[in-house]
Length: 502
Image 1 (cartoon, rainbow, N blue to C red):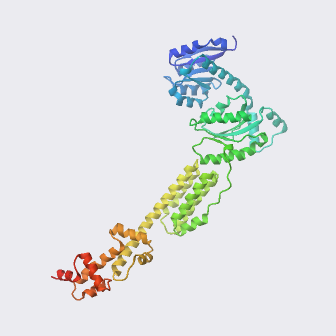
Image 2 (cartoon, rainbow, N blue to C red):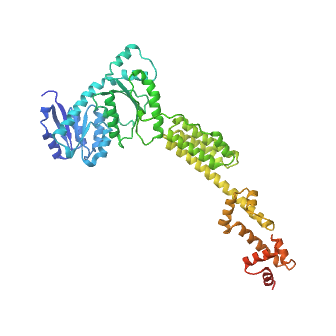
């Protein structure tokens, strides 16, 4: 039989190789086995000497791993189709090989004549599809599509020639962020499975692929469903799909609307690698951030309120995807700038932040998603809060020292927690808490301790009467002074005086 398809069998298990070669009457189905190898290196040597159309290979082999072998085959012989044999436990390897251009795979427990022939015929079908679909992929059509998507009008003759390549009524634009080492994306791999779907590369940049899909509505819906299933947790490549459109003249607008909006959504959805424009409803514009309120709150040292408003706004932005990435990064940089300037005006020690803010600017500008960008903002805010707390603590300690000295000098006067709080600019509840934490008593008990300690000193001098001593330490009522003194010392003022003057 002429024009037979040449097949190479690669497996380290002799019984598997022999089983494959005896499953079929190869020539009857249009195939012939031109060689067998026990590992990847042997197979590559055979391929240098023999024409091969299809390789059937194990995924786990000695000498050279199946994945490395497949990479080499796809690199050296891009027109050769690869069918992978795998065990149930090899799925992670199979997933990796699909990114390298594997055509199909067969589980070894399911290896039989029917499944083997199906995989071989599918490879033949893809070979035919490659031949028919390679025609639209030439540089002329790619250049023409790039002109259309960037807004240039094609001459009538070129446009008519291009239109003849579109055999289906509908189009979809796909933007693919991908690893340049991956020869074919999952979309391109899966596209070969569909008879009612062709695709054309556009490639606007070196770091992404743009594909124009020409298809039917039914095939497109099924294609998206299949891609979701195949791509679930298997591929780090990100795919952005426009909605269907029906005129090639709409290509530029679709790129500027659907794909542009999807790029914004993708920035906020870092963990989702498949986005379809039809799944999103564009929200009305969010109310702008009240920067004036934020800065005024900072100026009046209402830091908790200012940062609460900022955090609340950022949660709304994340929920509604309301800023494009560049706008968001500019906004975050502006927040950092304003906070630094205002704290400097308030005489906080921000010298370190004057230089460090540029590091934060740079980190935010290079962030690839919302979570990363806001992590850097939160790191800055946390550092600012620590600075504020440190200086506030230092200020409080200084004021506390002054307050305690004031009590020590004015214990004989009528003193209250409220009056002292106002005089030294403390919150009364904070001051009450301070005395309980650091003096282990409340304010009133602390004042009493100070007064009684002073009274003990005065009682050593017989010049003063007990009533005079009481008045000198802040007790105008002689009886009340005696009662308080006895409660604190377990003896009356007169008994204490008599005891210390013995």
